[in-house]
Image (cartoon, rainbow, N blue to C red; front, side, top):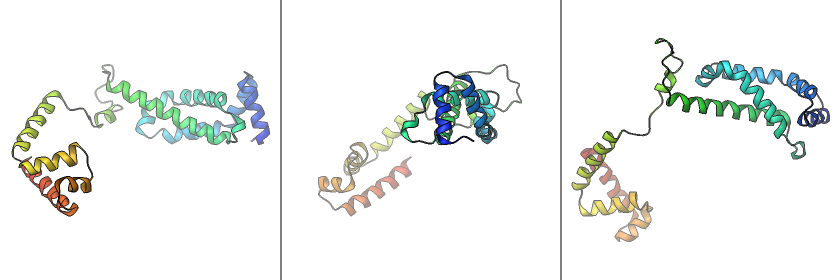
Length: 191
């Protein structure tokens, strides 16, 4: 390994385009790159990116060299490791996004590399489910008393703290808490 001054000098030379300095730094950090490659090889992201992982890590290595500023007093190894993690995360995020929006007709039926994406929860309900939920919500609200509707509006629509809702309703915060519990129980029964 190199001393801090030697490493900083190699980085400076590499930033100026010296390929020999780049190769020396790459050789010095080959263990870290291999470790990162191996570390993620068994994760869902690593399995999806396995073929591209070495290139991703080497590109992130070169970007780290060009972005590194020794004057900040940060250790290059720590800076590099952070950049490598970030590059892997970004590549996985892009792969997830791409795989969610792309059909893969060329994959064999028994290939489960993308089964991971099927397990991801879809947080955007279909228009039909939204319509059914709105109708159900309207039916529940019809069954509430005026006081329950007012409490619901203050706490969940206006997002007031219970103490502020208590002041507006001229009751104690404990009463608001009890009414809120009863309201939630009633809504659960109606749902």
